Image (tube, rainbow, N blue to C red; front, top):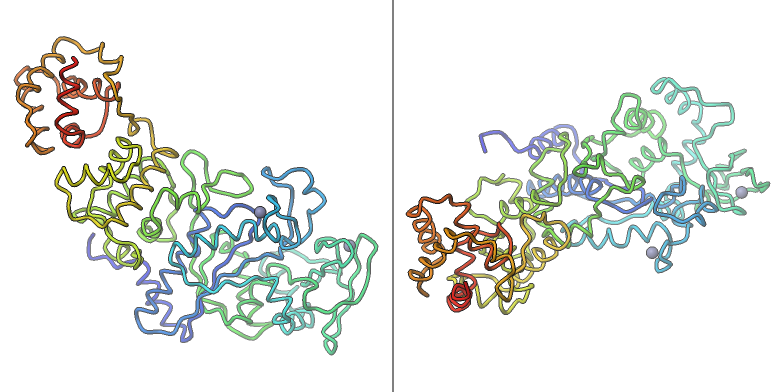
Length: 500
Ligand SMILES: [Zn+2]
Ligand SMILES: [Zn+2]
């Protein structure tokens, strides 16, 4: 790394120039599985939160679930019974697995577990609660009274005309349960009520609290006002010219008489070979799924090392394996600042190269006692047992779910059929090796021994090492041969060599 400043430190430098109170807000609409792409928002919030705290500022950090947004359509992962629920708020739509309180909670529950694992300390709020507890009443009334101002702002910023009957408030119909089919027809500031008509035929006067919501472009600045939000990361879709940040910035000033938060715009994360991740497209890797194969601090590191304005492709195959290697390796050229901010207290360093772990779990079928025996035998005595066990589980899950074939192998308990493919040269290498192999050799010495035998015979390393892989794995590739043989142990290796 050069002398360049770390992106998040630069952002915080900018924030403290214009803001003196620090409330960070992040959030999402739980309309589908919450994925790695969504994680960028909350982790961007987290890194800014940590740096502000590092500089001794008092910081609030919240996460708002927009659980009263309506179900927009029947997504590919839903069955046709959901047709009847289109237009209802997500917290009123039934849970797809029937085990959660609502559709919204179905997707939020695993996500909140992931947030904990990721070490994120945000206060969790639900938009439905903000409305139901009347915290939004004042801003709703302000928006209703200044509907003309809002219409003017929307028109000037977006170029679009709103019609005569347009209202910033979407009433929730008490009869059909939808908030997309209603029309506001009046309100009372004194009683804090609204009156609506619905296409289902219902029409009545109800309290503001719990009976609807502001439409997104007004809801967002209204929330800034109620929660005192001064910093917010959001996706580039809101940052376009005339987009919801542009209109929000004016609405908070001209309707709620406050200032807009400091914006931190982030780019999308796409999934290798499948484009931008999107719940409704179904091309997502969920966060809880990923946390089975990647330690949380490494996921943090992945997000932190790239500045938010850069899009990147997420590849759960070899790149994730390389990233964990980079993270675990004390020697590697990693981004030190991102690394420091990624660390979570409870996770201990392991002291074993991750690529070894990926080999070990495959050799032992993730038998932890065997793994420990092998490590002790091969000279690794200084490891943290709990950390080791957790790395082993990650490695094992990764191999089964995302590892490319070139990394996968299975240790054959007997001489495999494929050993018949050995040519005369390869057999000769194995004979000579058997003569010279001793129980005291280290992985590196075994590698050097094999290499010198191969060279003496004027063969290519590929042809030479292939001999080893064929008799143990039944394939032509495998992990680093010297260390692999040391790991297998002297007796096992000698027995197999004698069977040639
Ligand atoms: Zn469920
Ligand atoms: Zn209705």
